[in-house]
Image 1 (cartoon, rainbow, N blue to C red):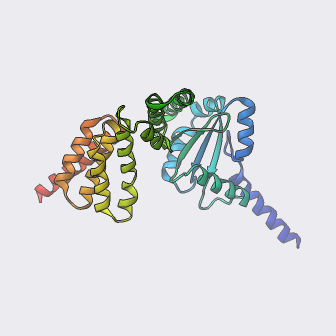
Image 2: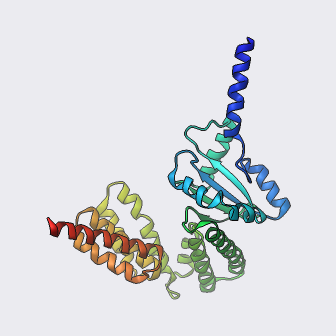
Image 3: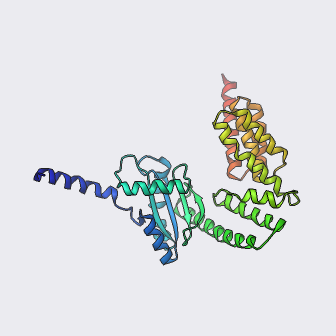
Length: 301
């Protein structure tokens, strides 16, 4: 190799180093991070991001992760792990393979996704971009962590129970998992079996939830009639709270898809009235406002 070629290779390598270096306060080696977390008794915060193309990832970094309040406080409790999926930034093949494996393992569907693990490497929370700046985000993480501790205690309690009492404990655990952005897993099936006669009102609740789990896949596959049937079957089980709100919301979206706007408005209003302050309730309000604007524009034509 000539000195010119050698110099060019060295220059290219030097230019790549800043892009490959860990972001300040963050690491990219997951196994090393797990070891450090165990040794220091800290939790892990995994940031699945597309650092050079994902708008919400960039906003989260600019508004939270790069702010002094976060950079000074978060490392006291968390080992921060960046799992990046860039378009233009070069990465070693080993790092690409690690990140892809973790994306599959934690079933990450979009970016940014923030996964929280305890010092034993057990997942207890999932979140993403949230507005409000670093202080609000740190408070959110603290709430998820406290709920994670409570989940562990609830699981331990449920393990010592049987029958309807165990169903109640597992239902509480399922609600906690939902609050922390986690799927219920097989908890629903366990609860349905334990409360087979619906004496605690939990069998129908979780059967309805299973029906609603089918809706996105059916709708995305083009089977709108099947999706609507699943929603109606869920509603016949007389769900309440979040499950009822989700059923009504899905029904509204299905009506909007078939341009049944008036019917959709009725369902959105009903869903909103279940809990206007929930995230889903606020989405209903926003959609209703947009529909009202469209009506206003139509009246003016």
